[in-house]
Image 1 (cartoon, protein in one colour):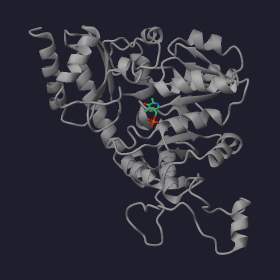
Image 2 (cartoon, rainbow, N blue to C red):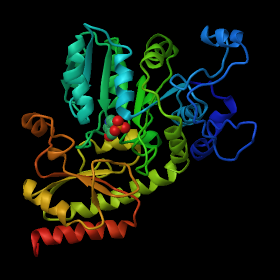
Image 3 (cartoon, rainbow, N blue to C red):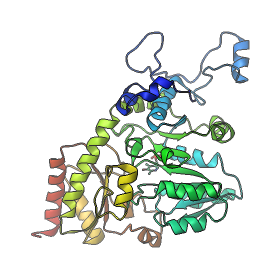
Image 4 (tube, rainbow, N blue to C red):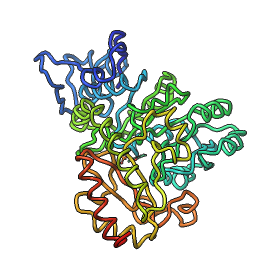
Length: 404
Ligand SMILES: *Cc1c(COP(=O)(O)O)cnc(C)c1O
């Protein structure tokens, strides 16, 4: 499941880590990473099998537990994140669920920021309470609320920064200090920032999770996820036993696709950020748009913090149409190049209306509290020529507001 990384490789620069990290060639000396599409592995003798099951030999046993292609992906991502351990999972939600459930038990408390991906919200507020695990939700940008909620012990703290879809930015270091005083492990869902812009483990977080479906694949092909951390006891006491027996494993084929995704991720994320900033600036000049939310704009409420934690604004932009939901729907319908889709971090520019899709299951009151108004539109800025992206936005906005 995890390998210790060679010391020489930690001197590699980011781009080199992405291309060569974790490469483990077979005896055929192939250039590209081999795809080990196998569920099992064979033993030369019953004694070898017995030793493997006792954990006395370091070898592959069964792909639910570990697989050579999956291990290459885990090692490459661990090297990028600067983490000792990485566990690949079948999806981002499998990573989030395993990271939490593997360490929580009945009677435990979790403290989480309120601005959450819809399925993370479901797990914390509807599913885990069935097992007697309660979550207290706070406004992630308000340190006083974190402090109050963490005045009592908690098993873990969960946050998404920047958050979906309103791009709130949370102070990872400050919340980690409060969480550690309460005995909690800090889990950061780092999907929007990617490991290229933000490395939560260096800011005090204990566990980072990804939906690899997003920028790591980044080409709309496959599902995947990952859990990264440094604490060996979390692996041995919590995650490893949970993972090997419950099986949220990443398939070798998907791991191979994700390995190839990592090779180009730096080029893609750099360009995503550049295009998104141009698009955010363009949208800010439009009369039919009330408000643009982008961490890379000085107008963002946590712009300074975002620049400190991420350096750049990322690939996601949200904005509120002055004409509410009818304007948002008409705008989406009028787009020509940009697709309507709830995925994100893709090469293709994608847009979604959170109120009626990703955040539909929330109550209206909760949505409005988070700033998810009926006029809010979320844009995942892709890798098309940025002039074509802004032209498409412009023609749709023009049709919407006539001559304004
Ligand atoms: C997509 C997403 C997830 C879930 O990942 P899947 O791969 O779709 O299961 C979790 N958190 C955030 C912030 C996401 O964007």
